[in-house]
Image 1 (cartoon, one colour):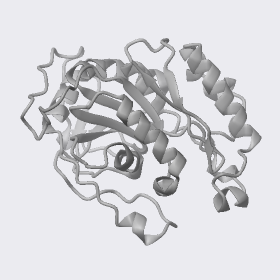
Image 2: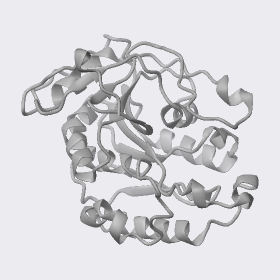
Image 3: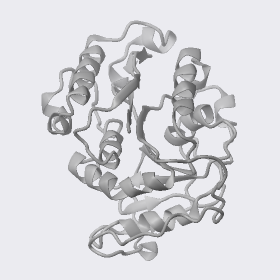
Length: 292
């Protein structure tokens, strides 16, 4: 975990009343119909996601089904840092936090505008007990790879926030505090992966992403589907003990954790979300959901 107390911001123990994000300040887009945004969890995929025509079509269809966001607040599995960190609020180079892929994946650009007013508002929404710090970190691949598909023109301001904890209750609370942003046209996006057992994939999955998923991935995904549909947040939060396919599905849990921030931002975590994307890629479950 990273920490930079010198840049920490403090807020009251309860979220302060917040002013709406200025329509034309900080690079925010004031054109079009923004409306109330849903909260979304996506299984984001590695950089080669953009070569998978089926998955690209699914993400594009998901983006088209949403109101156009005024800004995007994204929490990616690839940024764990405490205190809670806010990323760059101006356009900076991306973070190419991967290796072993063709060079072209490290030459991708995504010059989305920054969202400084959104960063200020997020800081004010956190309690006195949670420090919020600033950094110039660019978007990592958990953030920018899906966004290059969903909003390819890079014309929506994006702010990335770190995961200061991987504990479901903590992330549910953060999500609840962020929920009012949805009424201002902000898309709250959790980016992870419904299963992420990379160490337990065999060679065929690396060679052929369409190869049949292993049993532990299928079993965990079926459980996640049913548990989400039932609005059973208690069981979801206890996935390490209750879900079939563990610990193979998540030998580390950072890719499941963003789900809880999304559920919290949904306003009612027990509301059954829509699950517009399912199936597998490289043996991993790409299930994604939308909370209206």
